[in-house]
Image (tube, rainbow, N blue to C red; front, side):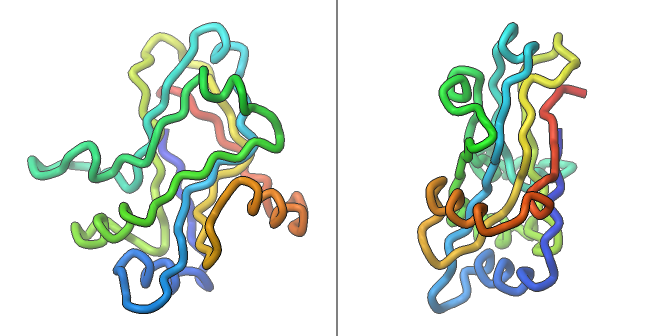
Length: 166
């Protein structure tokens, strides 16, 4: 599954500067998954999704797994963290500049791919309420994001996505 995160115009310049590694006090950059929930099929079968950023449509021989790799979510990990308040944060500080050097960074839209080896189950195994890229001068932590989201209305946060195989 691929989730395309559209970057608001107001944030594109800062995101581009972060990806290009411009001089100065660069903000932290992170991928945030919020409100994770394991479905009944996910509980029954278990799952593991590898998360990648901006996977090219055609990979070259020079491309390596770690060039795009963000992290992993799995049923064991989420069995301890699933609820409306759950937030997982994946730092992207080293990945964005590396992708920019390869010409695989677009500050208008960032593609997040959830890849699994699961082939039998066609229904969603995990759902999440929100997927976001966060730029901040402060360290990006689940606690800091919870404090911030209390100041934002629910309408700003609701972008339901389900991770499933196609």
